[in-house]
Image 1 (tube, rainbow, N blue to C red):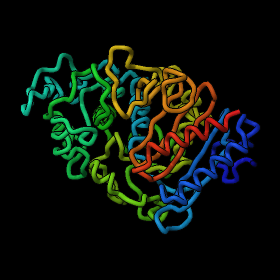
Image 2 (cartoon, one colour):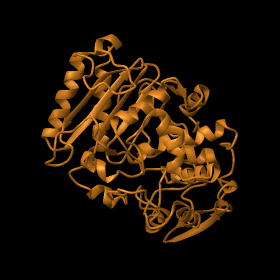
Image 3 (tube, rainbow, N blue to C red):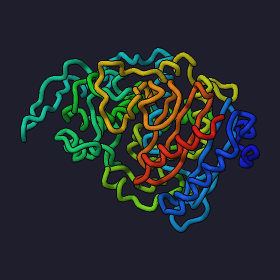
Image 4 (cartoon, rainbow, N blue to C red):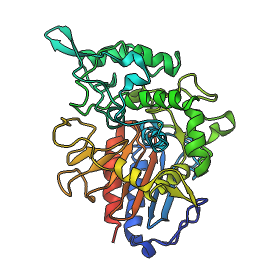
Length: 399
């Protein structure tokens, strides 16, 4: 197998064997994914693997959308929660400037979050008890704020969160935060890993500290320096023909995820899941992260800061029995972090870190293997299956 023919701008390429990947293993991966597309588990997909700083595999398969044109290398995907690592990296640039501390209480920036209450179910009654300590910025980054999503369970607080419509575009981000602060927390801050609206709140903190919208700040700090020209909170009409779409929006709609075809800047730019991107753009972001914060001669973040982010921040005392956090993993600042060679559902290396989006997109970085890999697909019902399958197939191609 030759080096990728669709060489991605700004990213050097190599033949698979030059960087320790098996061409035969990559062909097996292609064959497996073509079978999945033939089984109508996804209209199509794009995949990319880079090792030792060079892209050694980049391929697009299937269709851009149901009964649509072929999948293209410049397809635009809704990445949902793959927004979170980008926003967390952006927040850490403010930490490096001395404008934000991760130990700061959230209420320092959004006073409505002072004196939060925790909802405790007592039969059919929801008792409210005071939070034992304030929510911190670190809690937002590692999902220990006590906040929740409205679609991750059937608890009373989750139902209240769902009913509040926090992810709608009817209110501004600032207005959403004021509503969210009136709801009880699912857990005491710092005690339980609960996947949540925490990064959306972090996005609002960035707006307050930076004095501009989240989208403007991300363009300034991340997108423009990295050349991520197709990444943003909306897709202009001129680019709509490049949008990748799933077979069905049913699961996304049932979860309350935004499925609107946004063609103009939305009123609410949600830091937890609002971005659209391409595999090329996201590869640039991962090249920067895996490269210790630098890309093409420019620096976004310090290498020690990124190593800190990619370390476990939960420790032994935080409860992490959650279906979205794989066994054998902890969580850092914006990334899940592998702690054990075993226990997890796939092969891998201790220290690798990753995250994905509800529509099926996923990435991971393995420092030990000097590798990062991305799968871009819009297949919500098969998202976990594709994550496991892709991880297994990539690992099998490492020699």
